[in-house]
Image (cartoon, rainbow, N blue to C red; front, side, top):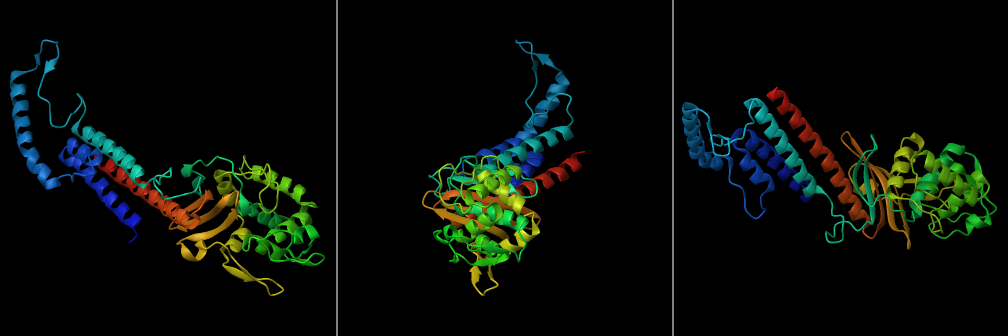
Length: 379
């Protein structure tokens, strides 16, 4: 069991114990348990019951005495009465009091859980180095965690998600794509296309999405739009249509260019949309493939064979952008999209964020179920 999973199970047991204390023993014990110092271990439930017994007995005697005497007024005109061990507002039944206390304890437990599981958002934690981060629920689009998610940065090769998806929608798999001298001259990463020759669109799309080939990206762009700048405008338009409002494309490859930008939130939105296309999703799942002329293409996305639940993703790197990544993961019924930008420890960042996202989903689901079942008992 990993350390993060171990911490999660311990915390869940703490939540259950706090709920029990809140309803069955005394709220003060639950408050000390949820908010107390981590240096002093809280007493067990049995110890708390034993310690509370004299107080309960004394409180019952006081209540009985006051009931015999009747309500009295003090000098300030207020009713003098003994303070019960558990405060119960006038006119509120014991069941409603228990339900209110249970609700408050759950809220406190959720706040404590979120504080424990939240990844550090500054350099002092030394757990994630990414400058911009977002975790989205792929089904609803809801943000689960975000750090500077709307700060514009250079996208590097993650923007090839747009290039590949547009090519899938615009070209037939067997359609021939010529290669210009401009495309051939692209720097690495590349698959070393030869100018003057033509290649199948299917092979070039796979080269873009798996091998992150810059030369294949430009060849596809020129085939579809006539020039790379014209295709970049088309990429920007599609990004807007797919919910990425802060993305501006200047190249088909993601190589650093003036005025080019995207955000972690936009990358996640684009990838979430792209993975709804079955052809795109099937290509992103491939760890390797062979082109029609026998060239082996290997996927740069190590998460496919190193991380549980990886469904597909796109890596990127330039000296300006640093390490970037966007990918989708599924565990059980939960599906998440994770996007990071400006990282220097990409794979460890991704692993921590993915584990955190699924732990939080499971944690909130179990707390919600616990609340429903307890609410049904109270009613």
